[in-house]
Length: 334
Image (cartoon, rainbow, N blue to C red; front, side, top):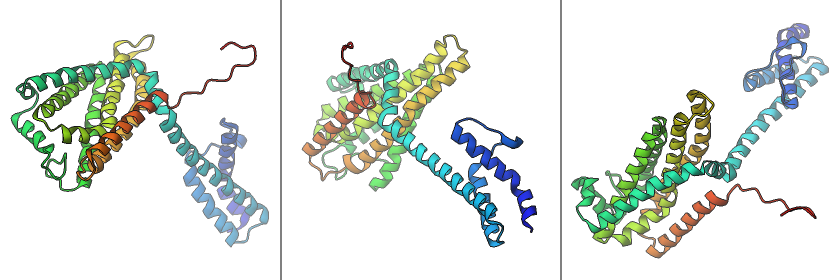
């Protein structure tokens, strides 16, 4: 193929790429020479690389090869920059975006916390002082299973459902924890009633277990087991509830927007919480499978590490991502 035919066949793509890259640089769409913008930059980049290789093989003019080579380098730089920006966004979210989202929705976080802790405290005290109250929430078979899980005579704590390895339990915990969090969040679309139900139910359920296990005297195994991963798991359940309550509030009180618009806006805000919540649940599942269940670590170490995790999570939620106050200028107000 002659160079003239080669240029005519691919000229439109080159113009589109030049146009697209110029638009990226100026942060605005530009349509020069009537050419359209490139929609799939990675695919166009691969085609351009092939065309550059063909031009070199057929020994076309140096001007054409220089133009294609410059386009290839510009496309490569753009694609690499997008990946770098994406990674930076995730880091920014983890270190500041997630805790800021929690503080922005603080009223729903505190409401979710109250709906979880109040029933848990009442049911926990009730189950401790009344040994039959736990059966209002759990069946006798479930009570026996939970007692066997935290029996000090067990070689491995917290194992259930016939899982023989920590890796199997890791997968089970991820599925179970994320399932609970997703139901608590998604049911908020029922005007918040669904989220309220799941938050209260989880509080009652866990309170009954805490009270009963304390009553039967398995505190030396139970509390060292739950304190480590509980810092991530229990707070994540509260956060999922807060995200669900945000959805429900958007439907109950949409303000000047339609309910669809209000729900869409609330969904964006709620997902800022849920991304971090899912990550916390993965961390909790890892700790529960590989750390909490170990009988080789002493009780004192587990309690110390668990306390550190609680301080870490609370400090992260309250302090991470806060902007440092600017130093007032001379004569300015404090």
